[in-house]
Image (tube, rainbow, N blue to C red; front, side, top):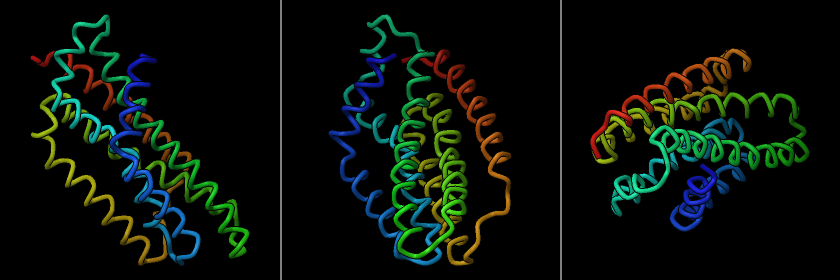
Length: 200
């Protein structure tokens, strides 16, 4: 498992550095832009679907059949992709916290309100892996590309709408995180089942 995570982190660094840089630019912009919900959500949405990009490269090099030659179960392969999604989202959240503190200092914004907003964006970012990964493990990356565009477009559209409306959906962070965690477990369970029954 550790080897799989390290392999994907190396791939993120080699192939997704531009994406990481863009995410940091968006988060930095949130310091100076009023109603910056979109600038806070977009990086976490993108961070949550980085595994999709990694799996595109894996499919090109025929990684899945090659991986079967190692003492690695399909369940571990699936689990690692979910862990990678969470690591990417948490990294984006950590960077977002840093910029939230800066914004609070510069603009005299309530820091606790800023942290609450970050928790909300983490919940929203979970939608990406929850929806997309089962499709990818059941079919493949190419057949799941339409789902990718729908998820990214829909999530960015909603975040832009809430940003323009200058309000965030009124939902308890505890409730949101709990629902997100439950759906993530359901998504993981489906992905494991799909991938174990899939012919490679």
